[in-house]
Amino acid sequence: MKIFGIGLNKTGTKTLGVCLQHLSYRHVTYNLEYLRAFSQGDLNFLCETIKQYDSCEDWPWPLMFELLDEKFPEGKFILTQRQTPAIWFESLCKHAERTGPTEARRLVYGYEMPHHHRQHHIDFYNTHNRKVMDYFKNRPEKLLAVCWENGEGWAELCQFINQPHPHIPFPHIKIPQDRFKTLESLNKGMSSI
Image (tube, rainbow, N blue to C red; front, side, top):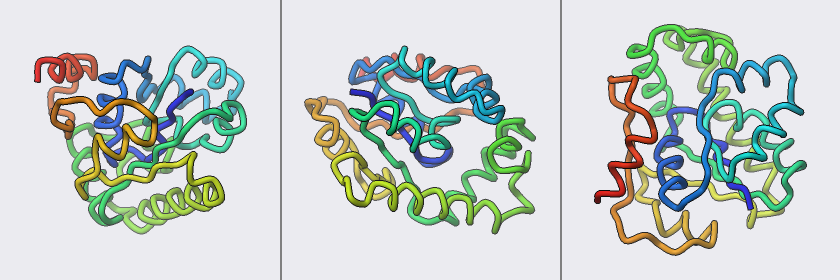
């Protein structure tokens, strides 16, 4: 069974990734090459690529959740969300201030920086979440919608994917300003908890 994280970036996707890695899933996170492939319509390449992994989150996977459901009918989907769209947008802006303009934001949102396009981004966030919820509304066993800020964590995640609850604190990962610190090093830090 594959696990697909389909929340937008800045919704706790890295936290989800670290959790899935801790639970021994072969995991892939954001990859600009894969996002470029998506924007060029190379969906066969992406479907072949995801076969190598047990789980994923971040770009480009949230943009193609319907296709992933079609190609991997045994898959389960996790929609990470923030408490409000405004909180999400603020987090997106803070991240953009640290990283500067990016090709990824341009490919996904149409703008390299979000700051002067608040309503566009909030509409994008709301539309994506509504589209996901509508798509799975008659198959609730396929979708877990979570907001880590509301205290959801290991219990909800492990019950959904039928895994034992680990006896470690739930990680709330914030990517540090040192952009070279990898997700793998964050995961190693969890193993010492």
